[in-house]
Amino acid sequence: MLEGSLKNIHAFIYLIKNQPDLFLIENRDEDLKQASVNFGETEDDLADSILEWCEKYPDIENALSLTRQGLDSGEIQLTNRLPGTTKPIAPPPPPPKVFRETLLNAIQESFPNQSK
Image (cartoon, rainbow, N blue to C red; front, side, top):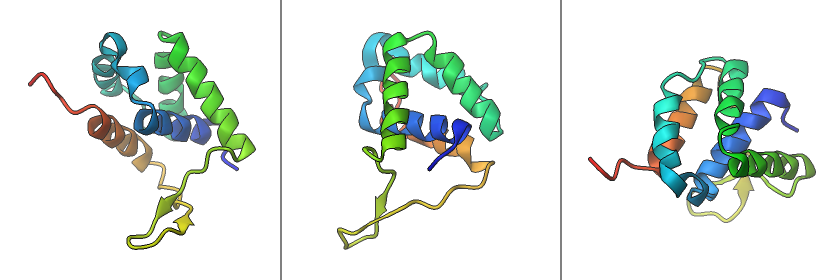
């Protein structure tokens, strides 16, 4: 089971990848891209930055809470699949310095810059 900060980071990335429509309302994706430049590097700082950003958007904050609960209950699984198989594998935990990069990549993949 994931703990505190790590759970918030994984839940937020899960939302970005699986519920991108939440972020497309009122250009929230652009706000997130701008805010993410100042997100912390450490696991705790990054999680705090995510929670602070979510406070501006109660529906995203609520979705994050529900996603964390889903991770706790096992309803939501963080899994990947090996190419050519249907058997899921649990992702290895990334080194602490990779959390921010993983989040930034998820933002870029889910919300490519459409206006430029």
